Image (tube, rainbow, N blue to C red):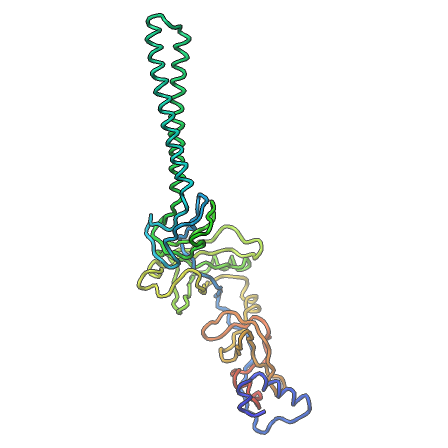
Length: 366
């Protein structure tokens, strides 16, 4: 295999060298030394780094309160809406029929009340002249009061039917941006079924799940910073810790409100959107004893020493006169280096340049 082909497949070159040594063959005369270093734990700096996501401080899921087909969907994802603006309308013909039925009930009750009033007035006049008994008068007045109660009941039914008809129109509860729509025109809306999700663009927060084992250290952190996708670091304007832990993941949720100037819709916002990934740095966090922290501190390797090929993350480890490719699990990128959480032990020698170590003829430098 030629050198040009080895350049295309650096991992194959390392395994080819291993195969030659296993077969007792000598290394090529044109071997290229690659600088190496010993893996060592990083200095204990009291910093913890966790991944989080951006989340709106104010968000609402709009749902139908009545059943019916969606006849109008006035918004789409990304639209801006004002408070009270139409978002969707559900078929209101059934509700309109209920309103007409209730109005007819009110008219009937009022007619019965008028008839009962006139009857009561006639009984009073006849009672004054002695033509009817007191019992007949009492019965007429009781019927009149019952008719008045019937009018009030019919009016309450009309109010309820009118209110139900109003539920067929879904409006924005506040000035917002439409995050997503969940139904289309023609879909059947049912009470409680989501139609759209909106959020107020005035404020965002970073939400991070802190492992329970790190909860105490996070609470004692002197500085908390949120690193955005563009590299900017912000100090939260407020931070809150939810009082409970997740029973499955054993994490506690931290909510870090970002300054208002960084919210979506402002000139400084850039591309900040809900759901974006961020990194949260807890600096100056107190933890266990320093010796214990040093023993558990992750290894930090230069970025050039870590090889990334698709889903493979690996380093070249020096063994005798060859390099062996070994998969590793990495953690946070500290800028000056990458944390290696598993796959490499302190004291092992690794190639400082993973690309050069993958070439044919690469050997550890003396």
